[in-house]
Image (cartoon, rainbow, N blue to C red; front, side, top):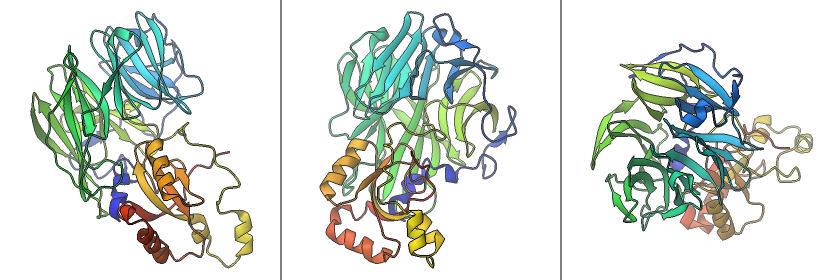
Length: 439
């Protein structure tokens, strides 16, 4: 199976909301149905709205911003700015406002709604993980390569370079007046790709422009350890997820809840399934769990999770197409009805499977394009989760070469590894079936 296990980190195929809950009991209080009903907006999120006041926990549901109060009651607002983009990644701060990302084809937009007004920040690439401080400072990640800091909404934003020797930075959080923490991706020996194998938490001192490592997790190209969705409680305690897996094994990765106090990281408990932190309320931790159709929010209470309804905070949408995915060329080398007529005795399953050699996964399109250029093979394509959900995770990019229906899969992958030994542990035979067609 090799590194297909990376897909299991965020693949909805492995997530069943009911069942397999070893620790938590799931209490469906808001709705007994999978998926989300349309929530009518009470207003546009303007300057006099609860969105501008940061009055409640903010989440994204489709093309709306939903605020949840302390008892879980919901109010939906239409965003003041969305254009043709997809809303994702939202943060709010009491008395300050709300910030959210408009994911567009090409560079994204970051929108901030607060008492000072509505600002629209155009990024130079992919914007993720915005966070607001209690004083109105705004920080986010751009292309997973740098952080951008906008003190109280001022522009232009300050660029924060990632720690020396690292390969990516994301999920920044304010932990003090002049202090951030962030997830940092680090290189791993003999790992020829750019995908996650090792993450650690780092602290950034804003005044001195210096990074300090906070955790000391280890990882290899075979045994990987990644960090996701850090959140900070009111007392300064940071919670985060640690995911661990073995690249060559088919079993799902482990999900673990950890905490960080000052420079000391401690494991809190094992988690029963794929779930991500969405925040911390006065009642306890808030979680995002996928129900097979949509992201849902859960409030942790004792040893159970109370369903607050649909909503995504720092997880990527799965029910909406990624605007950055290029529209498919109908003339590309896809299986067609004509092929079925030409080979009436062929197995429909074989034709529909659309087998291919995949190299990946990569965190950005630029990384995938660079690998495609190095390979230099005719007919290479870039794919994402929407095009090939069984082959690649949401938010990731891959490079594929489609194979003829009569190809000997063992021989073609052996030949590929012979020609490109540097990618032998980053390339596999995959099925491109099950995707959402474009055009």
